[in-house]
Image 1 (cartoon, rainbow, N blue to C red):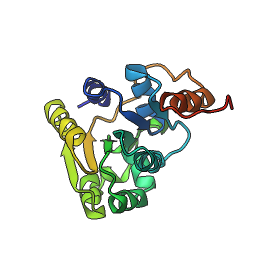
Image 2 (spheres, rainbow, N blue to C red):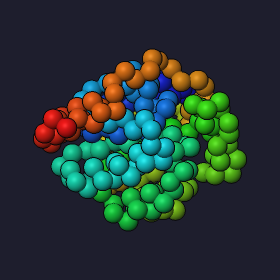
Image 3 (cartoon, rainbow, N blue to C red):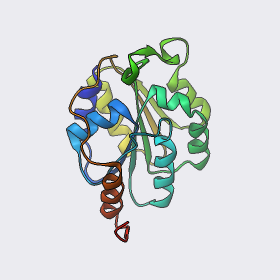
Length: 191
């Protein structure tokens, strides 16, 4: 399955959820497919999307929070999975695209190209609802289950290692932050 294909499936399933993306390809492709004010693109913060998503889920318990991450970023901050499991927000879903590579820097193999298993790591951390999928139909079903879950969910989507698709993100990081905050009703005071 291609990541761009999975992102299109996901875009068709979302309504007004808060979406936090990891950097590089995930952010760029999501912005290309589904740019909207309720997206927060972490373009320069490798490994922190899950932590930011956890903070949002805890701060906004009435809203569903979706984190779009990559295997390299998750591997960089594995401790966040334990913290997420311990906090167990019922409104958080992690969608982790595992291409077994660091795509934005030349497709060097990540640890998941070897023996690391992100689904097993999520389960071991204590995340209750975990699915590992590699085809569009199973991805769609896993996303639907994660969105309906009344606990924290993780979907590990095995995708092809390929160059990033789509144009670069044109919104500045400053405007992305303020647009996102305005979209969730936070007064930014023009800063």
